[in-house]
Amino acid sequence: MLDFRVDTFLEVCRLMNYTRAAEQLNLTQPAVSQHIRWLEEQCGVKLFHYENKQLNLTAAGQMLRSAALNIISALEIEG
Image (cartoon, rainbow, N blue to C red; front, top):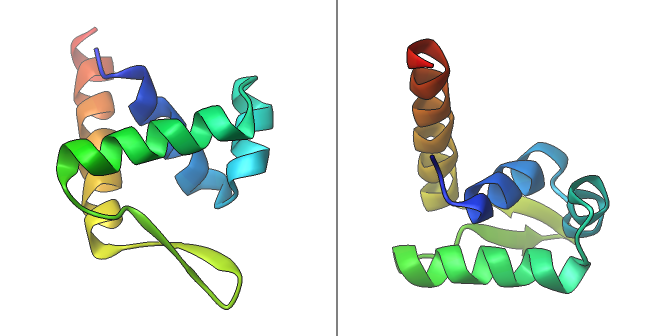
């Protein structure tokens, strides 16, 4: 089972918007920000950055997204 904050991360990746991710997850936007901040602190890297007012994944964020999706896929196959 993955940490619930990984679900938040993946939803932000899918929507590329903290507010819309919060709405989809029935969370507040500050809660989504806290989840992402916690993951960044645990990993020691930034996962997202803004460029021209657009949210983008960093290289580390892309790696985490790929790893999380692979783990979820493996768990679904086993389960």
